[in-house]
Length: 115
Image 1: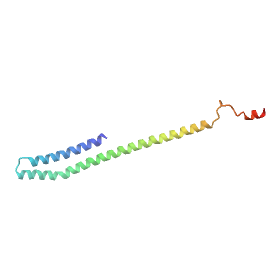
Image 2 (image 1 turned 180 degrees about the vertical axis):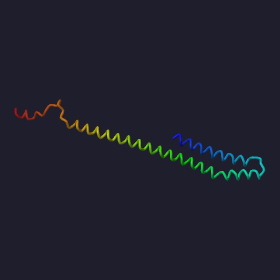
Image 3 (image 1 turned 135 degrees about the horizontal axis):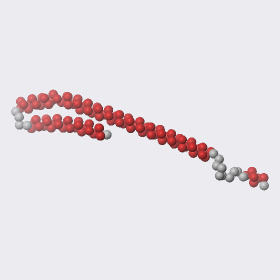
């Protein structure tokens, strides 16, 4: 989860730096020609920046997907174990109920009928 946050933070920092640089260029007291040159350089760098951000987002999405898949596998395994334990406990309980208990008195109806 922290990998996802760090990727978002880095992408936001890069975007903020770019926007800050553009705002600084527009507010700077430079002649128009120099400002246009700097803006052109910045505009030329935007596709590369967008590609870097896209790559960073894709890497973070892949990590998140792998983490979600691992969590799903772990949950599924715990569920299988719980079901197996439940089935085993049910079978033991069923066997215990079907076994005659030696402490219980035997059916004495036949003895009382003979008397």
